[in-house]
Length: 257
Image (cartoon, rainbow, N blue to C red; front, side, top):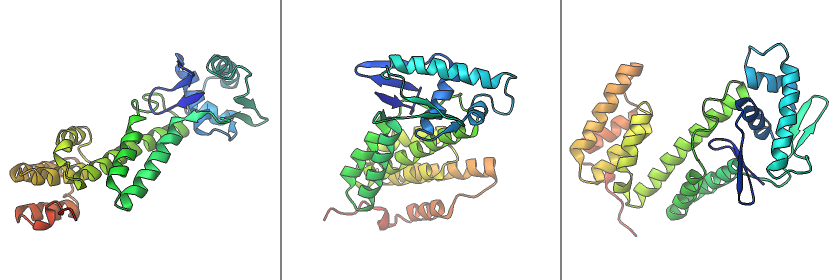
């Protein structure tokens, strides 16, 4: 049995994949899964499902959803009904060895960061690619209302973006900078206020003998940041701009030892 939360929530068992069609049930299972092996109170579940505007019979609705979730999990690999445990204060989801894509993502990121820091770039790139392969889409897309689900969705997106940044860094350091130009253009269009992507695109364009385009990326970043935030680019971006203007040799790819 394996829970997957990095995309539309689903449960896998053997070769089968099980999904929930009811959004409230999906939200409840997500909340229990995020807090797995810890008691989630009934009030916490009410907040996650309805925010600060719960229906009058919210507590009864939670009880019904829990019953339906138990039936769903029974078909998805928990036939004995042991996964969801009722406690005096609320409910607890026991993983008991079940797989979880979030755990696998965290492990891959942890390994990738350590490998990157120690200069093992090929290994790091493999770890980052493995982490990215686990992401099937936005986590809890459009479902998060309460603090637990909202916080998780924010964390998942931030980790995805950091993983992409680190993957680009590793490829660039390995001399594979031309591979990431298209990706970086897409990421800038999607996240126009994230300066890291501008910096990375400027560097890879410069190393691809496209100095004029690299300078144009800086002007674009400057225009967007001024317009949206009333700010100038961060000093790291400004330093890179100056280095490109002067063709600073420090920007060249280090020669292999």
